[in-house]
Image (cartoon, rainbow, N blue to C red; front, top):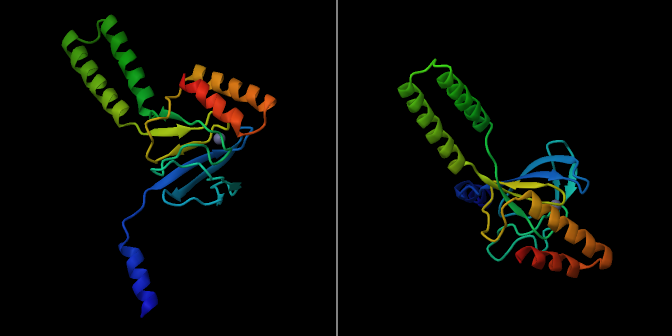
Length: 189
Ligand SMILES: [Zn+2]
C-alpha cells in the first residue's frame, strides 16, 4: 500500500537536528521557547508559553543555510555566545573554598595541588564542551543547537552597544535597509 510505504520512508530518514529558539519580542520581553527542524523555516511558531510568533526567514540564512540574521526582529548582525553551564559557578566556589582551606592550613599542600588541578581540568573541559549560541543584540532572541558560521562576531558588550547606537542613528536618518548594511560595515571595521 502506498501510504504505508511513505510512512516507512519517513521513519528511515536520518533525524534532522532541531534548532532551539528562545524568542523575545522587540522590547525584549520573553515570548518562550520553541524547537524547529533546522531544515525548516516556519513563518509562524507557537512557543511553550503558548505565544504565537511570526518569523521572517527572508535573507535569514546564508548559502550554507547557516543562520545569518535574526528571524524574530530582522536585525542583520548576530553574535556568538558560549553558554556556560551552571556547574562552572560551583567550580569557582569550590576552588575558592580550597584556597581558603589552604590559607588556613586545613589542607596539606599536596591535597590542595591535586584538587586544584582536578578542578582546573574539569573547568577547562566544561569550557571547551560548552555549546555556542547565536544572540540577537536588538531583541535578545537566542538561537541554540544550530551550526554557527565563522563570520559572526563574539558577544562583546561594547561592540553590541556601538552597533545598536549606529543602527538607531541610521534608522532615524533613513528607514530602509541601507542603514542596516551601513551599520554592518561599521562593525567590520
Ligand atoms: Zn532580533
